[in-house]
View (spheres, rainbow, N blue to C red):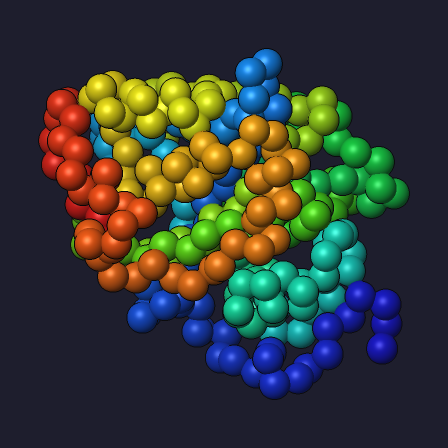
Length: 285
């Protein structure tokens, strides 16, 4: 078998149309982009524009639904597009098939390019991407669904860096439009030399913040959060450095939170606190 080829075994025998997640929910990926700031760990967040159909005005991590083009062909060789932990090891960590693991990683990388201009990739020779400005046109093409991430990688001779993505959490819920999502969250270490931007039509504002500052803003009605974002910020708040968070991610349980945890102790503050409502009701779980 050629180097990097994926064997056709039981884990790969699924119908190509089977692209849904838990209980038929649409698969989605969100990325907690991290850096070590002047006073400790910081995460990149963005406040969604008021015209978004789901969670308008809410502060979120970059991410979105898995696109059909994020999935690989039924027979594919990930070796030419992928470096780092293999798709097999990622699938095992996610408790998924290789087919879906590939799509989730590609969706996470694609969404980060679209919404922040940050590329979790390297040149084929292993050279890091210090500045992703050369992907500006491709970024717009991705947003318009005129290109797939696979197209972009092949055109520029790039490979996804799976070692920069660390499975972190999994939440299943129903958005305001009634659509259900099976959201896989990944921690990502901000690549050296690259700086995310807020140049996305989906957000009014975006920046680096400490988890504690965001949670304090939520308590005072200055930041709107849905439960999954709130819960992940609470978890991040306990780490002082990116290295600590990444180490913890390796041991984080990835069981889907699929039913309302209203009475679960870790989430009591969210359900018993009523910050000033600036933009109207939010529904999740």
